[in-house]
Length: 158
Image (tube, rainbow, N blue to C red):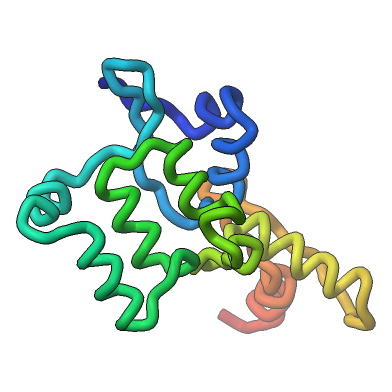
């Protein structure tokens, strides 16, 4: 077994690329097992728990609680079981098995780049007054009020 990067996995298959492009919100490790199968890294506690309960019963319980294949609880269960990425695609992304696959929206906060792109579109395609935004390349933070703060410091009698 070896851990593989998302970049490596994305290059191998279009279905894997779709999964990893859509599911950026978690950092669940991906492995290549001794047979060359690419899968999510198993959570041994989940596997042991499933020795005591039928997966079908657990899925039925999740459905009764209001979860479906587009819920993060369902998907995390399959990742923690160590499911293969291809099997994961078949269950969650193939519309034969998940008729509402196209409605899946990951639970996530936007990345700095996504938030910046969104804000850029709002500012430059909208009717907002703009000011310069600085990006700290070392820790990838964005500072929009830096100039205002600098002007205030220079004008103060500190």
